[in-house]
Amino acid sequence: MTDERIAAGRPDTNDRAPNRDVDERASGYQPRAQDSHARAGVGHEQTDVRVWSVVAAATGLLVVLGFVLVVIQLLFQYYAVREARRSAAASPLAGAYGRQAPPEPRLQTAPAGDLSALRAAEDAALHGYGWIDQSAGVARIPIERAIDLLAERGLPARSDSTSPAAGDEPVRNRPAAATTATETQR
Image 1 (cartoon, rainbow, N blue to C red):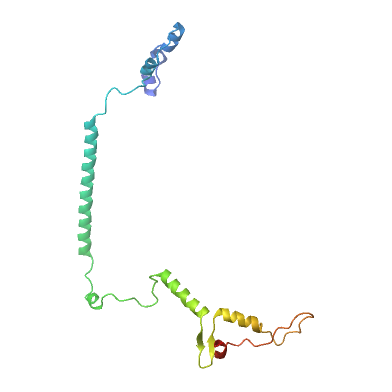
Image 2 (tube, helix red, strand yellow; image 1 turned 60 degrees about the vertical axis):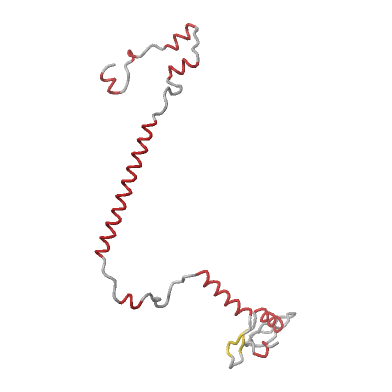
């Protein structure tokens, strides 16, 4: 091969070996499968893996890993000591006051529990009896009872409304006042 072709990675055409397969086919010779594999570089390994090289590589890896772990532990200790020296001492009042709750408003610590408590309080208000203003005689009734009373009495109408159209039933003209204590005892 010439130096220029070697540097470029191209072999010289004159340095190639003659094509043996073409010559063998012309002569009628059929190579066996194992001969073609041997010539092509295909086949099984002739030797086993060297165990000592695998063990040496694994041992080296474990040694490096152990070294890195020791260095990291020493760095953590160094940084902890350095930070302890740099930080200010605790306030002498911290021990006297202890942990106190911060002022309002506070973050929710259990939002799911707060939501279920809110819904329970709302359900109790919607489905139970209670006083809104006991001195005035205004009470709260369950929503089911309020629906029944509304269906029984009808919706209130405006007093200045025009007369209903022919064929329409008039709406009962009762004021929509709060339920009194006598109605809650029914």
